[in-house]
Amino acid sequence: MKKPVLDLTRISKYMSLILRHKPEAIGIELDAHGWANVDALLAGIGRKYAIDRGVLEEIVRTDGKQRYSFNADRTMIRANQGHSIPVDVELPTAEPPETLFHGTAERFAASIEAQGLRPKSRLYVHLSSNAETAEAVGRRHGEPVIYQVEAGKMHRDGYIFYLSANGVWLTKTVPVPYLRRLER
Image 1 (cartoon, rainbow, N blue to C red):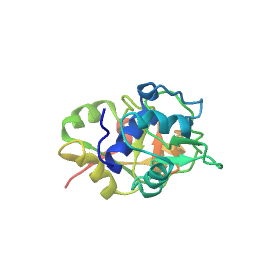
Image 2: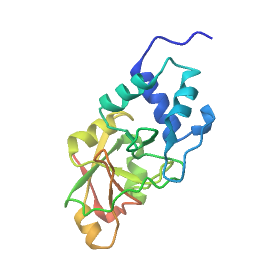
Image 3: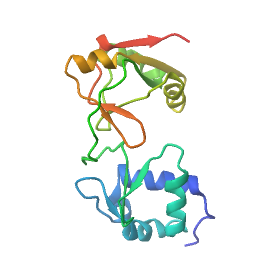
Image 4: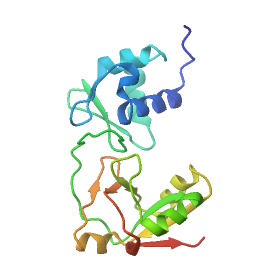
């Protein structure tokens, strides 16, 4: 089978699928903290795409969302957040700013306004530090809707927040009283 021409974006998306949702797609396992052996990852992805350690390092270094991290000796790699499979990526708890933002598509607004933000297929609700990033996230899913989240109040009320290595704020849920839809 002929491998496609090198396309870092396509390889990165495939790698994201593997490291966040389906490691079994290439026959690898993630450890309890989401780490995968780099050589096993390269061998698995290599069955579909032309990849070597240099390409992998380029993807990790240039990824705009900083999705991936290597361990200290670069023998293991993991996705920083966004998993739908149960792993503990050892996220530090953190005190959030007073306000965070969540971007989604219009088609999800009625459900959110009735039930609040829930993680769906992921382990956490993802929140952005600014409305612009949230809008970009929402736009990926359709006509964007932005919610302002009273994160500081949630934190004072006992909700736990985590900050991923790539700057995404995470929490288990955001109840309706802490949400305000921003008008555009």
